[in-house]
Length: 539
Image 1: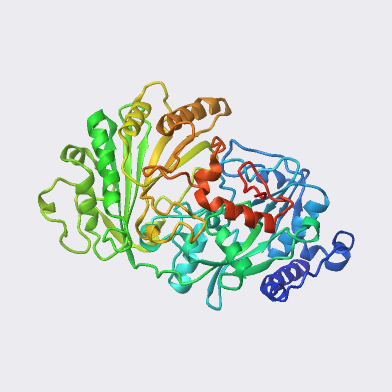
Image 2: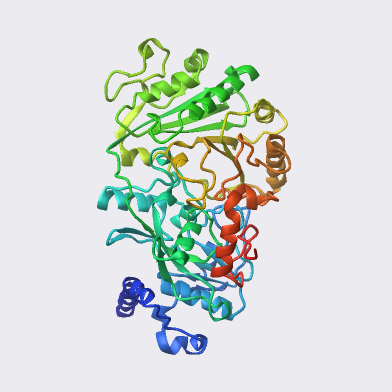
């Protein structure tokens, strides 16, 4: 017990004192690192190395997408930035490829590593305040991060809804969520990163240090690159620093509706999608009264009479009855009469502010207003244990006719029968649109909708069946080059990576890609961190 307590004390000291060493530019372990590590530091300063003969090893063979597994040479479980540095140096010395995993929720196999070293950041999960900064370690899960920020300081990070995702990859990919139309993206509050880079000593790992906006040009570049430049590119992020986070709202209103596929024909389906997209096309911009509204409209594959289109609505603000306004704008009367709603009709705050809504069909007014923390926990799980394929697209305008025709045909056809396949259309825009496309690495600042194509299954024998359907749907929607920016479409979301994209550089990053390349070349000139779609360091 004494040894365990001592190890905990040493690790705590390392975590608290690391910033001092970084600020002074100290690199305590130099060229003699490998030969003297054990004598200088002892086991207390090293990661927990997990090899194939360890019973824990199987827990690290896959991320959340079970399509991808690997057999790493070892896994380095790190509890501090110092241990990340040690693990990275060991991997380079042993000539092993490095892959970094925080939560393991990459949609492709970028967090898996055959015969290399996986650096696991899951134990680096602290959320704390340091001066004016809110500091979140890379392994902190979103749920824990939200809860700590709420209970300690009454602030929030406008991130995603899956509580088991870690901030490590979510933030630097430009994470968004239900509060983003009102408050912007996670990266809009990012002012600093602590990072292990690979630019000195012949490409060896550099001791972790922190960089902040406004320090100098290099720091500005490094932070900017992590404001949407994607994970596994520039270095190993160990901490994020946020500033001026928005206050947590006291209450949030929510509603869930399901519209049966069987009441729709092609004409009514097309009209519904156009009304949905048009609503967000006209309600964009910083001061729109609907910016507190977030929606996710899931077009599930039609498989049998029980299939439906599912809509999740959340609202944060003083007039929750604006949910009524959205419902009136989207659904016609037959759809409202057929809708199944999750919450019984009632009005939480006051009489509806929408004209004539009292005479309109239900489910108008059928929202539930509850404390914010309770509301954000609704649907906070994930699809762990499944095999999956994903694709994405940003939209700046309403759907072209041929895209609606494609969605109707592909989602209603009898030839593909996976009920866990869907196209999810999430609201975007609002405050997100007020930031310039070059101000952060997130360049899709004019978009009003974000689409996620998704399919889940469990047997490897069904891989080709599902992936082929997804590819056919996507190609019919956008052509061979994908959703290239053309005024209507606006590229793809790097946090929904898709290895089928040949021109991913343009679709993920648009005109920001050359700057990301220059920064990559400065921080990782030997390309120590790389995967199928990592930033290319050469210019």
